[in-house]
Structures are given as structure tokens and as C-alpha cells.
Length: 50
Length: 509
Figure (tube, rainbow over the protein chains, first blue to last red):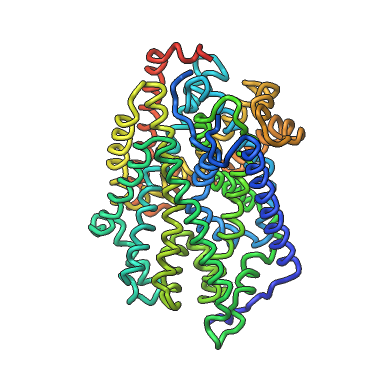
């Protein structure tokens, strides 16, 4: 049976994970905040679109 | 005023669009692709495709949908006819109904497995099985002439649930479903991620099989893979599939917007929400968990075997070994079910909208006809080996890239980028960077044509001539092709007759 080689997280691995997670989370938070802000300007959250 | 339905709320619209995008692929296909192609390095072509293909095409489909919807057309044939008032343009739009319909045929069946497995998990139906091979035999009870009546019963329940949502319409059906299903989906995913991240090392004799090394398995980049054309094609294909672009479903959903509604911010919010579900939640569940229990060698083998092996054969075994595993398994499959149903209703909607808008049918009549057809068409998917894969390749993989190419050329070059840009930025709640004007006009079309050429060069001949396909599947694969051609032919005939039925609508704009 082949010996299993466990690769530990490398600096590059952390970098790829961190950049991906942080950029996606930041962009998602930005978009949701802007949606909520523009909805607030237009009226209550559940106001019909027109 | 054309009397079409509208979304009741903006939050409902965004959740419905995100629900369409977030599907089984986010939690099964993405981690398998990333693990198979270069780990973290996969994210380079993935993000490139997201920025140059996915988000631009998403804006294009939103813009096309709103443009057509305010003029009484909610599907690609009508929208194309408005954008290019020639005799043939509407026939290119047939793919925007045919592809989602073909995908719906098999997608709803897979979705029914998730509902069934959720029930099986709670009742312990597979708890005696301890090997992947055993789970494979269990999964086979969903296929072939010997498919179990339980499997069939769950399919009937699934198709009825989908039918009910579509029958109730946009705001009372699809939007209401999204408002319930999407928060539940995120809640289930977060519970599972928290549980996996707090598991430690499940086997004390193997402390190196832990969550950090599980994430390393997925994220450590193999940069030499960047020279692999296959990885670039796979990443672009994944972006297409995950954002639901190239299907025509976004066009239809966006057609229920009003003239001055924002599309730039709403479209971007949909895309980022989908990415959050895919990269952060989807990337933290199946593959790291498989690694923690099976180790790197078996996990690599599982990833190579594909999404079904991972989702339906490997993970149930793992949940079965955990405390409260029955509940965790039910959450996992419940999560997949909610992801599935919010996507499948979006796949059904273009056909229903076409029958309503272009043939003047009532929603109830259109829904009944569509679901009777789907029920009949799914039978060979259940009974015949290879049938599902063939539909998936042509409609769900190659087809969406083809239709995406048609859409971008129609939008940027036939309709004209100047008018197209006005459509995208009209009513926008954010400023769309001007660089996307040039991305849409030049880079996205070239990228897509390159993808098509790359695919044809790499796989085209083998796929068309069925090289390597087991002999018992060949006749069924041809049957699947005939079914797809028949669907396209019927739609062409309907589009042709719809011209006479709704000739005034095209000039209404």
C-alpha cells in the first residue's frame, strides 16, 4: 500500500486562500451594504421595486 | 404596459437570482474541479474567467432581460428579435429555452436524490453501509429498470414541488421560495462548516488528518498546472455553470424587472453571493471533510471519480461516523436540495415564460404542459445508462458556452456596445468601471471563441464520435442526441408560429 504523504499548508496556500476569501467577502459585504443603503433611500426594505 | 408579472421586492429578486446561480455545482462540482486541477492555482484562471467572462455576461443577460421584459418579451427569441430586427435572429434565441429545458430534465432527477438522501439520513436507511463501494450499490438503486419505488416516489415529490412553485408565478412562487430557501441554505452551510472546523483530527492515531491540512489539500497551489489548457477551460466552464450564465435563465428572470430598476449592483451582488457560497462555503465542506476521514490518496481518487462519488457515496459514510451524524447528513442533503430546487425552478421558467409571452398561454396551462413533458422526458434518464451524461455535456457544458458566445456577439456587436452600455448603466446604483465597456466589446467575445475552439480541438472529435464510450451506452447516447434535436426542432417551429401570433409585440418596443 502506498505511503500517504500529507502536505502541510504552504505560505502560497495560505496566500491563495486568504486573498480569495478576503476579496470575495469584502466584495459581497460591499454589494449587500450598497443594496441595503439604496433600498433605505427608496423606502422600507420590503418596498416594491416601483 | 404589457401586463407581465414583476418581482415584489429587490431582496426577493436578488435571492431568486442567487438561488438560480447557487446550485449543486457550488458544493460538489467546484471543490472537485479545484482539487483535480492545481489546487489554489485553479483560482487564477477561475478569477480571470469570473472577471472577464462571468460578471460581464451576467450584466449582459440582466440588461437583455430588462430590455426585453419592458417590451413584453421574457425569453431569448423575443429579446434577440428586438435587438436585431432581422428574420433569423429569433431562431438563435431558441437555445436560450432549449438548453435550460434539457438541463432541467436531468437536474430535477438529481435534485430528488438529495431530498431522498436527506430522508434516508434521518431514518438511518444507509447506516449499515461502511464502504464507498456499498454506497455505490445503494446509489445504483436510483438507476436502471430496477430503480427502487422509493427513489421514484422522491422524484414525484420533487417534480410536484417544482411544479407548485412555477404554477404560483414569480412573486408568489419563485420569490417566496427564494426568501425561505436561501437563508435556510446559508444557515445549513454555516452549521456544517462550523462543525467541520471544530472536528480536530477525527482519528487520534492520524493527527495530521486535520482541517488545516484538509484546506491545504485544496488550496496549496501547483503552479505548473497554469500551463495546462484543460485547467483554463475547466475554470471557465465552472464559472459559466456556477453563475448560470449562458443558459438564458437570467434573461428570463431579469425580464420581470421594471424599466428603471438597477441591474449593475443587483447583478454584481448576485455574482458575489454565489462566489461566497461556492469558494468559501463550498470549498470548506466536502473536500476538506473527505481528506480528514479518508486521507489524501483516497480523496484524490474520490475527486477524480467526480461529484456524485463525493456527494452521494463518500460524505454519507463520514456523517454516519460522527456524533449526531444522522442530523448532519440530513443538513448536508437538505442544503443540496435547497440549492437544487432554487436552480431547477429557474431552469423551468424560460420555457414557461416563452409559452406565456409568445404563444399567449396561461401560466397554469404552460406549467402543466412543461411538467408533463419533463416527467416523460426524464424516464430514459432514469432507465438508460449514459443518457444523463450526454444531456449534461451538450446542454450543460458545451451548449452554455455556445449560447454565451451568441449572446455577447448579439449584445456587443449587433445591438451595439454604445446602446448596450446605456442599458447596463441605466438606473445603476453603482458606477460600472468604463473598462468593462472594452472588456464586453473585445475581450469577452474573444475569450469565448477561444474557449469554443479550445474545447473542439481538445475533445470535439472524441465526443462527437463517442470514442471510449461503453458499447451498451452508445445507442442511448444517440437517443439522447435525438431527444435534444427534437426539443430544438419543436422550439424552432413554435418560434416560427409565434411570429404570427405575436407579430405586434416586436414592434411595440
